[in-house]
Image (tube, rainbow, N blue to C red; front, side, top):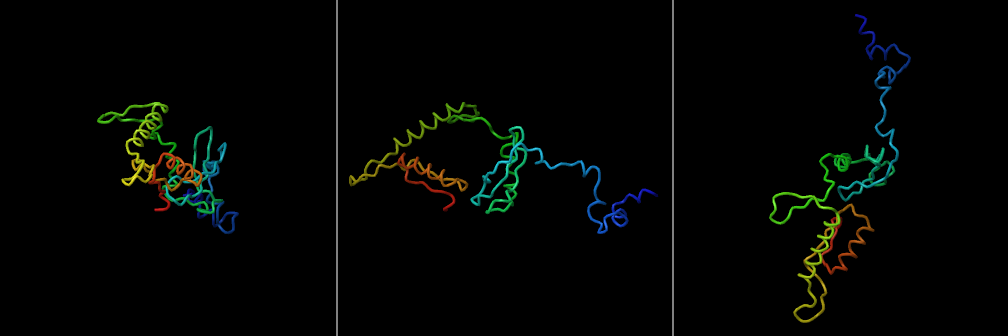
Length: 186
């Protein structure tokens, strides 16, 4: 019968807090809890990797590992808010299913194999140069200079910043590609 004396409602009505808020609802377990961001070694500002909005994020790091990602209240774009995908972006770097090696499946192959990064980059460079050589157009049918390739194109992501877009445009222009676009403009 005395069990009901410890109920929060009774503590609210009879306790020291005249408005019945907070103190009566607290418990030892509540007092012992800590914010999961409290022990972070560093807080790094970032931009959400998903859509073209570019919401600001605060990335909490402890012992070199990402422990939490939250909206950045100082961001003029998102003012601390994140959509469900942005809120779950911590899983991009912490998921045990995340690929951390270069995976390659040979043409007509049925199995994936691991490659070291240098081998993968060499393969990409070889294919870019071969595609450029095979699709190069020096002149048109009337002999007018073209100096272009239509075998290489680029569609940039919406989260690329101006500097990244500038470098990509310079690279593809140097390769002779004429189909260079960015998702943010589509």
